Length: 217
Image 1: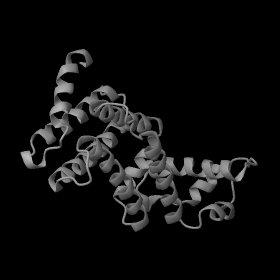
Image 2 (image 1 turned 45 degrees about the vertical axis):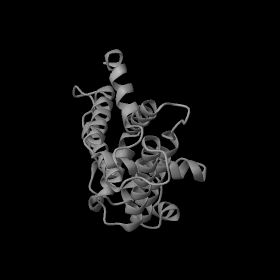
Image 3 (image 1 turned 120 degrees about the horizontal axis):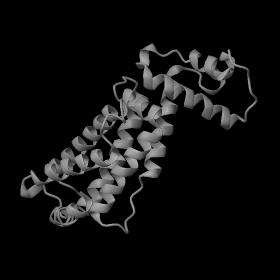
Image 4 (image 1 turned 60 degrees about the vertical axis):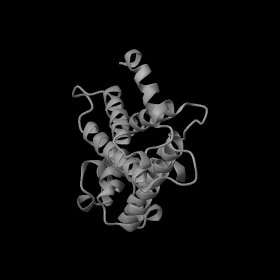
């Protein structure tokens, strides 16, 4: 066991969650024993249990921390146009995932969890992102159901794509490539909708993307 270092409660809590993120990112939930976190941190199991009484509580707090950080960092700027809001959101998401690779992978693992608290946290995060995109694309109090399904499906896709990218982010694909793929995937999906489900800002969004493509490519 590593030598113990006295830390403030907040710093110790952060240390434990950071170490836990590494374990959950590399291993399936069922294979992780949170006692390993105590060993890595050089603290007693009793101290670990003081902060997190069960593995379930530990993992739920880890997911809560990572999803809240993502939500805060990706808050849309209403002063930006629709395309720039979309690009900003994707760029922030990818940058956050890369900077917090372990935590991001842990969240992806959590999406396959059967823990209702973890699933509720991930669902809330997805719902907030969905509402942000819908409000930018189609301002108003209600949105066509098919449009909602399209945006939700795209969010699941980009989460899966990001997880695959994080497995080896140096293997010839960079964040710009991934952002362009994600952007075009959403535009293509929206363009494929029937007129009754297309968002109000779709024409503006596609025209803006087409106009700027040569400069951005």
